[in-house]
Length: 244
Image (tube, rainbow, N blue to C red; front, top):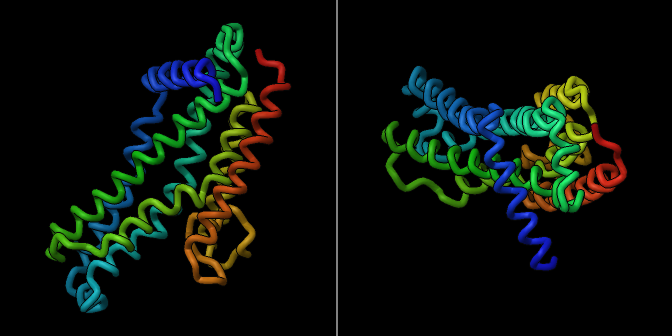
């Protein structure tokens, strides 16, 4: 990537970050992990005696594992809503044509919003990590959680879900009517409710980090590779697409 292209991409990312003020993207990115942590804390608070007996000797592990399913569903829904928010704002304000009238590459415009979207979700992962740590400490589990398990639960689902993210983003950019990508994303979330029963090749299962091999890195690698392929397909379509 040339210096000119890098500079152009930085300016586009900065402009897209400023546009977040007009969307609900930032509150959504924050509410996701806050909701997951809040529901988990409420569950442990109301059933403290029962759950501490159930997870006796592995309190931290029980707390962390109990957040995985909720955070998995929140991530899928967040990808759907955030992608629709970022792309939908451009469609509603007819900003695509204004942006592409500038001396910028279409590939950079397409990449910029996906980078901002990924950054927002990464912030959500950090908040989830910190929130679980704080919850466990306040519940009296100590302040030394199993960091490897906590990091894996908080951060692995994002790269494992890059295929879902690239698909939702590509659909949101391609469709002026956001009901289409939203419907597909919500159907993916509904399918995710039965994630344990889905075949390993279904992309909406990958952020759950469950597969026949038992290795959580398998869906991570799958998500990164498939996400890259879907990103390239979406970019090719955007480069050829007429915009309003």
